[in-house]
Image (cartoon, rainbow, N blue to C red):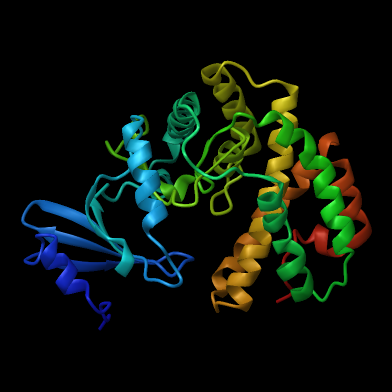
Length: 328
């Protein structure tokens, strides 16, 4: 029997849902837990993001801003952020990734709609969020050398790694002002198809870490998905589709796309290793080869030359040929 967090019943009662049936839902890579409340023909989603590991205040802040701008974040029905409780509108079960598993022929249409939603977000003024600055980019990229490299028993040049990223990120930072709202985890597992079809409105979830940064970041998050294979031909077509809806995306944009793809993929390899080594979640290791393959494609862009040279000098060829996978 699954235990319910302390205080759940009391919060649900205060929110006016005390007579609802509570269904626990599968968790994610965080400390958050989710529950669906069912009452007659109505439903709602309950998130428990308990301090000190989690803080729902940023989720509430970003959700209000997105909805005020005409995007589709879940409506907030009740919240007690100091205790980690948030009750929201239920977006249903049509998560883009699962929906595409059942409707593979609709893949292009679904990605076109996701790209168009991203272009709409980028037409809004940047939100009242912190900047995606060099310190954040560097802290994220360093997860590779902090977690994956030691786990692979590699002694690497961390100072050279930082210097290489500083060099390749300089033009990105220069071109990302005034910036757009970056959701930072925009991919098929965090997009809900509200009408249950490929062209349906995009319901957004898992956006609490939003920053103001470069428009290419969420695009690469979508098209170089860590959890789902996206064919390179589809990725290329969606870059063209984004350019059509965003008013252009020239060579500088594509260079920044590759740079941010490499930065994000290096970060994810580190995060997935940390989830295994620190948090006891080994299932994420199986996703590393997909992420590493995208990282290698990004490193091939001339804009990544300093970082590519670091990889050549520090990461053994056999590990790279194995797409960063750990030995069985």
